[in-house]
Amino acid sequence: MPSFPADVPTLFAVVILTSLSMAAGIAVVGWSRHNDGLRWWSLALLLNAAAYALFSLRGRIPDSLSVLTANLMLGAVFVCMQMAVRQFHGLRMPWRAIAALMGILLLSLLIFQQDFVARVIAVSLVLGAFATWTLWDLVSEKRRRVGRGAWLLAAALAFQGVVFVIRVVMVLQMDGEPRLDRMLTAGGGQTLTFFTAFLVVLLGSVGFVFMSRDRADESNRVLAAQDPLTGVANRRSLIAALDRDMARALRMREPMALMMVDVDHFKGVNDRYGHPVGDRVLCGVADVLRQRLRAQDLVGRYGGEEFMVLLPDTGLRGAEQLARELCKAVEDLHCPIDGMPGPGIAVTVSIGVFGGPLESADSWDMLIAAADRALYQAKKNGRNRVEVVTGLRRPSAQLANQISPETQPGSLL
Image (cartoon, rainbow, N blue to C red; front, side, top):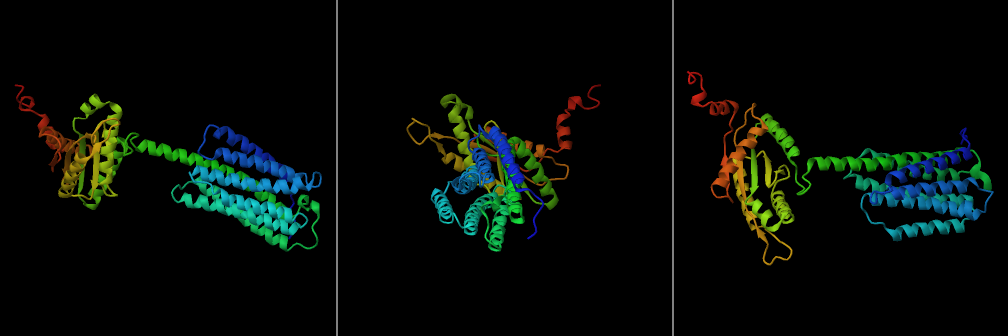
């Protein structure tokens, strides 16, 4: 195979400097963060720099350092990378399997100290196994966490695994007895191996940092769409979903229903038991609502003790039946209180339901106003009940209601 015009000691220096620079940067960014794997990744980069520093001294220091210790450090690099990925995804570390692979690596280095070909093959296979294992952890978790960083790190690990295989094939095809200092000799195999190490350090580190950024972006997106107390949708995401579902219902000519749910006498719960207990009641009601809805439905906290339930492709009869079931389910709910005997606090809800035909000029605030009217009627009629409305107060009707006889033209004369 023809040699590439690259100087191996120079590649060593590039790998070492890149690893140290990346380690320093990642350590600064992730020092105060304990569960995203950045510390482990920084340690992997430091070990990688130390390993290549020992490799660069081949022939000038004992083989126990330049061969045995350096290759064990490379194994530790892949272990730290795997720990970083697993900590990032909240997975346990399979310590027995890792210890077994590291044991195989140590035994191979001890047995094949004088056999360059066998040693390279053994090291490549063990490190390739670590890279493939980490890649599998990353890909299997990425099914739930898609992001650019995960793709970049996966590509780097896959590339590293392929190069290990190529290195084994190249070593098997070598002619003649290799010399001890062959590692520092410019050649196709050596250049490919160490240039790949540089790319993996660079792309893998950037990919892992992007993974942390993707997670932060996802957390911000969730925080922007969820109510922090109950975990259901917040008011902003509710209105956006209502606007979207209304447009779809008009386009597909499908029915649509909307519920407004209010916890009865909730102020009394806060006044008597305190706000922490009131928060627990709200969470319990939210769980009851969420557990009894379909996948396409959406429940959210509209404000205070009031919840909204969106029911796409649902007629009035189905919405009313569901509302009565929800009323009964909340009535059966008893929120336990620490130190309080008995089954806990009994709460009820009043529900207003809108279900009726929509027109192209209708807007989401008209649906909310209609469901609110039904809710007000439910509370007026005794609470713990369901009331329904089928009509919207469209602009013409609202205008007629706003113009009283005293303010009509002619009444001023």
